[in-house]
Amino acid sequence: MNLQPTLSNDLITIKPIQKNNFDALFEIASDELIWEQHPNKDRYKKEVFQIFFDNAIKSKGAFLVFDNKTNRVIGSSRYYEFNELESSIIIGYTFISRAYWGTKYNSSLKELMINYAFQFVNSVHFHVGDTNFRSQKAVEKLGAIKIGEIPDDTSPETNWLYELKK
Image (cartoon, rainbow, N blue to C red; front, side, top):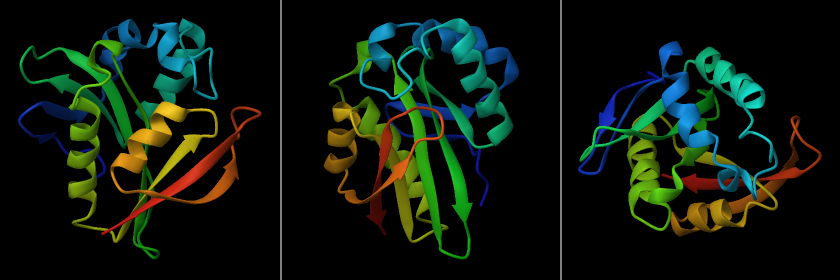
């Protein structure tokens, strides 16, 4: 499975993240309200976001999300922990500009990534912070079911594990 394909639908295009994309992505990530319900509430700070960004590059599974109408970066997402034996992958580290909240863009992004992943795996997982109610609702709208809880190595909070089967 190629963890960084370029994918597109009518609303968005996702492309592999590159080192020179930091400024465009940080412009969005510097909005404190994006991280309000997130376990890492200080990710809006440049030095904290730099760690997130560097890990995205290292993951070789991270994307920039572009609005097809404006060709502007509107967020990011990532595939990780591809498990060929268990036929599963995780989609996460997703955030989009608040200007796109409450629109079809987030679900369009997830559907694009899910449909691609289901060509290679039988289940897609999501890690969602236990206080991240917006993200919990978003993955539940996709049909994902909470199947467990796991500790978050980067914060004192717990992540909920959701699963969506093919």
